[in-house]
Structures are given as structure tokens and as C-alpha cells.
Length: 414
Ligand code: CMP
Image 1: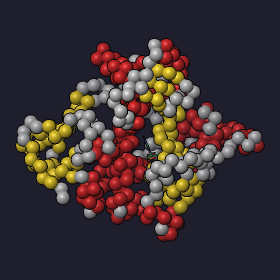
Image 2: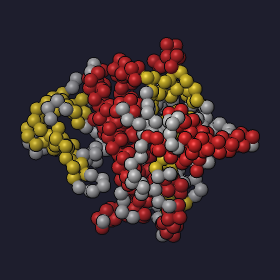
Image 3: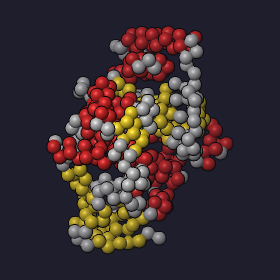
């Protein structure tokens, strides 16, 4: 049973960094949330008014609170567990859609901040030139199947484009390279190791859903960044790789497993696709349209909750990435990558300070957005000082507290 809890003026409901699963609805009074703006490192505040939720993201995502909740005037809040929250959601179509929109918007805002930070070319990108630049980025990365698929999408969507010839030429080159790879038998389906992650909801195995099923061959593009979107997808089998192209460079956002959704953002806020989604191996998805989307999530609170949790995880991951990128120097960026992997692996043995992470130098390059040589130099320096040991498939950090010190010191200096 949800409980009403009273809080006196000036008391703290939770601190930034706390870990707990409570979700709150403010009934009376005023609560203020204070967090740190990652880019400017200045406090930002948000007032919570009567009837509003707070504490949702960190509770659903099981990660530390991102803000401190302070009571500004005598307050009463309903405190919910996650399952009570699920019940409240179940009956409220408007609330579900509102929350999904808010989360989708937050994710987009973080994407934009990351893009602005990484993009030296500040020219605004429109859908047409954005789509073509995504195809060019795949070509430059020798990823010819996605390049061909995106060129086809471009030519179908913009038959009268001034850049039609450029797209057609790109397609011809990519197709020739693809055919050559096929002759040399280089385009084998990658092996999929099922890690027993998220499982598809039972309901989607019902025969009535089979009419929504679609298959994609490995390497093919399901969604291209910058195109308009009318459908969203649930993975039935196989893996889907999410990629964002920033300034001509491919950035891997995530690898999605059976049971996970994608493509919901364009539907929620009527904006172009925020990332490219590629079938990593042979993939089967259920494809739903906008109307199905509203029916599915409001008719089935379990699905709404999965989506909300997915957003929480994605927002957290991207904020964490952003925190790495705003570190003032290369050494602290790299140290913060180790801290992030440490948080994700959640070691419970605090006495044991040595940590081994299954990451490569290239992973660190991806997370820090630093040039390979600079990352290598920094890692060599850390290795000479005995702070880390490098192997081809893993890196051992001798004392994780060293990395915390590096990050703290450089934040204080800057
Ligand atoms: P949409 O923008 O419609 O199309 C691309 C999809 O990729 C997007 O919806 C989300 O489903 C998914 N997506 C976008 N950003 C991320 C992210 N940072 N992490 C995981 N998935 C994402």
C-alpha cells in the first residue's frame, strides 16, 4: 500500500548519489530538486509542484540519485515502490504518454549536448544532408551494406534532390565493394552468443502478433538516422546495433537484445530518427505503427514500464558519457572511463582495490573521443607508473582509488 509521508521544511528527502527505489508523488507543499549541470558545473534547480512525480528515473533504472530533493515548505508525498508505481501507471494512459515524452526529450537533449561537444562543424544539419552524410560515414568505415541501404532510402525519399547524383554514385561504389566482399565470402553472419539478457514478453509470442513480424538480414539498416519515422520495433531474435554518426565518425551507442524496443523516440516526439539501427546478425522484429504504439503501451502497463526503464538506462548511460567528455584533460577522461566501468560492474568488495575490465584501447578511444595515439600515450604513462596493466582483451587497474583521485584532482584544478 502506498504511504503518505510528511516532511518538515528544510529536510532532505534524498541526496544526490543515494541509491534507493522509492518513487514520490508530491501531495502538498513544495520540493526543489538540485543537481549539477555537467557542462558548466553549476547547480541547476527544478521545482516540484503538487501532483508531480519525482525520483522516478533513478528508482526505475537502479542507479544513484542524480539530484538532491529538498523540502522548501512543509510537504506531504505519497511514497511508492516500483510495483505500486506500475499499478498507478496501468490505469493512466495520459500519464504514461507524458512520462515517455519527457524521458524521450531528455535523451534527445543529452544527445544534442554530446553532439555539440564533439562536433567541430557547427552547421545545422537538415534531414536530407544528414541522411547522405550518414551513408558517407558508413562508406568511409568500409561498412558497405548499411551504406547501400541508406543510399536507397535517400534516393526514394529525395528523388529530386540536388545531391541525387552524389547519392547514386556512392551507392554504385558501395555495391561494387559489397559484391566483391560477397565473392570473397567476407560477409558472414556474426556469431550471436545469447547472454540470457532481456527475454521477449510472453504476450508477443501469441500468434496474433505474427502479422507484425519482419526479418532483416545481418548488416541491413532497419532505421537510418535523420529519416522520418512512423514505426517502432520489438526484437524477437537476434541483435540490433545502434550507431550515431558524429562529424563523420561512427559511434556505437548500444547493442540491443531480444525483448528490447527501439524506434519509439521519433513516434513520441515527431522528430527525425536519432540513431541508425542495424541488424547485427539475422534479426526478427515485430514492427508496430503509431496507433499500435499507443494501444500497446496503454493497454499493457508491463510494456510501458519496460520502455520507461529502457529510457532510464539510456539517459543514465548518455549522461555518464557526457560526464567523461567534459573532463578537462585526457588523463582524467581515461580515469573516468575506468570509474564508469567500475560503477557498471558494481564490485561489492571495497577492500579489494584491484579491478580488471574487459575493455580494449579502442573502447577507451570510443568513450573519450580522444585520438588513438593520445590514448595510447596516456595508457603507456599509467602503465609505466604501475597504475594499470594492459592486455590485448583487458586492462587491470592496480588501485581504483587512484583513478578516483585523478578525476577529483582535475575537477578541483579546472
Ligand atoms: P528513434 O529516434 O525513433 O530511432 C532511433 C532509435 O534508437 C531511437 O528511437 C531509440 O529507440 C534508439 N536510441 C536512440 N538513442 C539511444 C541511446 N542513447 N541508447 C540506446 N538507444 C537509443
